[in-house]
Image (cartoon, rainbow, N blue to C red; front, side):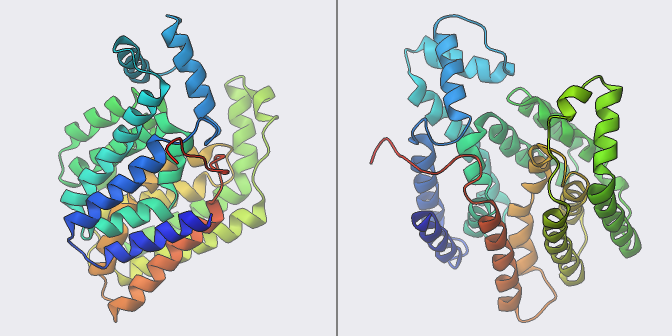
Length: 331
C-alpha cells in the first residue's frame, strides 16, 4: 500500500504543473505498466478473464458481451496470449481517460490524480470489461455536455458492447430536464438519501419478488445502515459545499449532481456501486473544474478540501477488488 500511496503523491505533484504534457504522458506510462503487466492473481475477476480466454482459444463460446468476445478472438487470431489481452484492455481503459484529461480538463494531471485516488484506476485491475465501458461513458459525456446527444447515445450503446450495464447511463440523455434550483437539489438529495438508507431493503425485496429472483435477493446482505449513513454524510456535505462554491451550474454540474443522487439511492444495494461507476466517473473532470472556477477564496483552501475528499475515498476503498497483494510480471 505504501508504494501506491507514494504514487498518489507523485501524481499530485505532477498536477501542480497544470499544463504539462510531459507529466501527463509519464503518468500514462506508469499507470499502463502497473495495470497491463499485473499478475493474474491481482483482481478477483482477472483469473475468470483468463478462464474465458482459454475457452476462446479452444473455440468455445463465452457468455460475455460481444465486443469483449471480439477482442479475445482478435488476440487469438494473431496468436497472442492472455498477457496481450491484458495489455489491450488496459489501453482501452486508459486511452479515453487520457483523451478527456488532455483535451477537456481544466488541469489534465489533476484529472489523472482523481482518477487514481477515487479508485477508478484500481477497479480496472478487477472489473476490466466494465471499466472499459465506464471510460467510454465518460467520453460520451463530453458530447452530452456539448449537446451532441445522439453521439452520446451511440457511444453509450457501443460501451454496452463491453458491459451491458453501460445502458444505465442512457437516461442522462434527458439531463437538461433537471431544474436548476437550490430547493430542488436539496430536496432531491435528502429524499434520495432517505430512500437509499431506509427503503432499500423493502424495494430490493419487492423487485426480487416481481421479477422472480427472490431466492437470489435473499442471499445478499445489504450494507450497514450506520456505515452507509456516514459515507453519505461525507458525500452530501461535499456536494453542498460544491453547490455553495461553484460559480456556474451547467451541464457538468448536473452530471455531478446525478452521481450524488444515484449514490444515495443505491448505497445499500448489493453491487449497486457497479452502476454508480458510470455516474461517478464525471468527478475526475468536474473536480479540477470546480477548483479553478470556485468563488471560494483562497483557492488553496478549495484545493485542500477537494484533495482531502479524494483521499478519504481512497482509504475507504483501498484493497477492494482483491488488488492486494499486488504482483507485476515485469518486476
